[in-house]
Image (cartoon, rainbow, N blue to C red; front, side, top):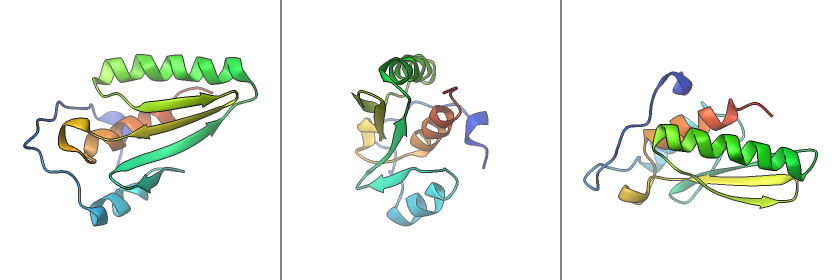
Length: 107
């Protein structure tokens, strides 16, 4: 599945969240992402703080373009990213699209 060729689409509260079985299957299409309840997450390592912040800024631009925003934290040279679809309280295809596009950002 080519997640990076797709765009995030607005989800309304009535959209069904992905089942745990579907999430497990879809995680196999991404590298390094893991399930964390109704969310997916990944840690990214950089050589220094500036590299981590460049990545965060690129991720922020991507999130705005997609209209889908992850949570993240920076710990000097490590960026932890978590995403889920807030409006449905779980995961949707948008989360996998965003995760793949985050993975494709230059580091």
